[in-house]
Amino acid sequence: MGLEGLSIGALADVTGMSKSGVFAHFGSREELQIAVVTEYHAKFEEEVFFTAIREPRGLPRLRAMFERWVRRVSVEVDSGCIYISGAVEFDDRPGPVRDALVGMVKAWHAALHKAIVLALDEGHLQAGADVDQIVFELHGLILSLHHDARFMRSPGALARAGLGFDRTIQFYATPAGLQVDGARKPPKIGATRR
Image (cartoon, rainbow, N blue to C red; front, side, top):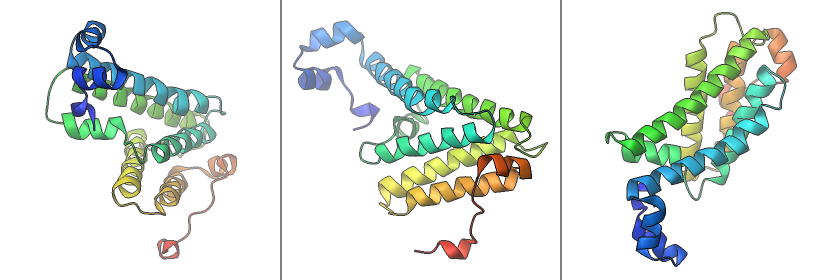
């Protein structure tokens, strides 16, 4: 359905409330959409971020963040990811809903950025590693996973995302970082055929 499919009337029908009752709670369709995005973000943080930060700083924490993010996407294969569908729905539509979505994705990128900086500080990544590039690559893996799992229904999408993460870490990590992380050495590209 997406955020555009949300309406005061639709929510009233689903909940058995009157439209005026739903309107009194949210005030507008836009506020309803923002409330849904805010709730989604809170659950995302709870399931992905807050559980991952219990892991030791450095690559173990970054891996935990990515693995929990992958797990979240795998659960959303049938329903979709609000961050991704919202980006499509609101990419060229300025306003509070888009601003809320952008703010929440930026908050997640900032958390990834911090985890990568901590991995640098711990000596797990090569000095001079481009933190923004690593964030970009990890987010790109998730976008590919979502596309291939949800749209293409590719059975190997989860494994490919994990392999992509391992290859990214292999490229940027120090030997000490690889030892701490326990990342497996990625196979050659030809070895990943189904």
